[in-house]
Length: 229
Image (cartoon, rainbow, N blue to C red; front, side, top):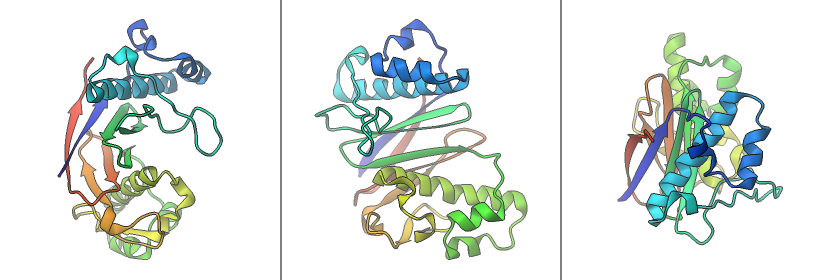
């Protein structure tokens, strides 16, 4: 059994005690965001991730340094890692909720979405496999949107875990029904093997949908915490 903690936070204020935890590259990224809300989400994600990493590694939070070099383009917007550490992190945010999940050097993906979004036919046809589309038949509009975003967060979580993102066609993977425990039922892409993929639908917070995916054969035990600095 793999024990995983997912830590959630509302956006932090841009105060010195948090800003000083950003390195020069992170400071540059923070300043490049034009909207205050985007700045605060980025800051919160980094502070939250560094707090989790510090606890995991048994070090002071202000000593944690991330390498976020993108494997594709070399720019510093990739998944944050601590070089040499037995640790994998995934950060996700939507609206006023930011989350971080950590695993021991096992690919992990976390996704959170606001639950008040609508799902039109075009989005459903783009994202869901035929079996998933069929499961929505007969649902009222609100129910259909809620069910769709259960599938969507699961798909985003596994895409993040593989590191391939939308290079894996969304229709090529099928999950268990939206009202059943999360499970990858089938995959046409070799990057995702149902036997080595574990998922959990998360509670997150009122007004949000979330899921975590880990590429492992171990079963998952996930604890969710809401962090107050």
